[in-house]
Length: 402
Image (tube, rainbow, N blue to C red; front, side):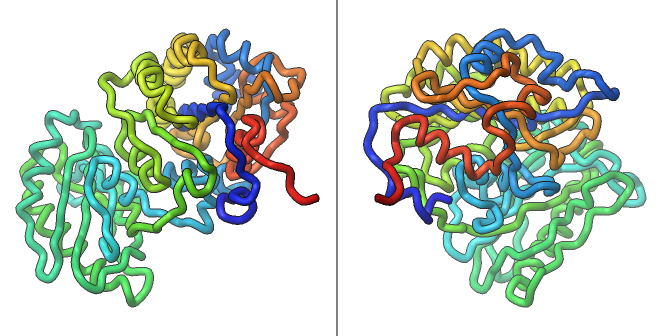
């Protein structure tokens, strides 16, 4: 929505908005009638906010569409991911400080484990630690590809970013990750004629990388996905009139924030308490803060029900530190659902909590959970509708029309 109607309606206000995202928050019961992880978690602080606010559910892209993290976050930021497609590689690279210029192609990489036949046995190389993975990734920096400059940097744990620079490169390339075990990594395949040069360069780089990795006990393979280039998105300042900051641990989420003009806040630590403390330090610098919690998604993908419950409870226990800042509008939701039962992202609607005590109309729900959200006053809406709602409840939108 940002470039159609909102800019003409924006007005100045001293109000502050917080968008708190628990990645992969939504879920399903493990057994019919049982609780989801959000419903099983003890969340007295978020339940109080639910009772004082309004609940609903959001659709990240469109009904039935399972989103990647990049499109899901763009939707939350108000940018229709169908109108503004962005490769995850661009976000990953930007998040660790790599430059993405016009004509560059970026991809997000995973180290993986291959068996003797070249089939993937572990898509994440046993979740190899950053300490182990970094020197392995650095060994790939020596790879040369004719006619193209290839840059590779470690991101976190088993993840890395690859950027190709050169003339005539386009990033319409299919992923090499087969999204499962028991299959070989795929060859990079151009989706159109303009991307053939870049796809060929990727395949040459990969071939040389596999020779270097061959003797590694766990990280002896790699996959690439999320190819793309700089989409030149409108900024939060232009679209919403907001000075926006990002508080996140994982590079990809810093990257997607940079794409829309947010400042990335530097801080130490990884816990929700650390993130809320970082928000406190920069509170006077911004009127919008995006705060991202990753491990809810990680636990969902690992099939760890109790672990996901514990992460949600940890966020709730830290909430007094955030609420002490006295935001005028607080949105709590996820970018997508990651049901433990499925061990993957899914298309299911995402729990949504809008807290704006001055202007929100309270519904009858008193607990933050999937069933309560399905009956909440906001109903079920597209993620792209969340930012206009936040702006309206913050008193930042004028009347439309006479």
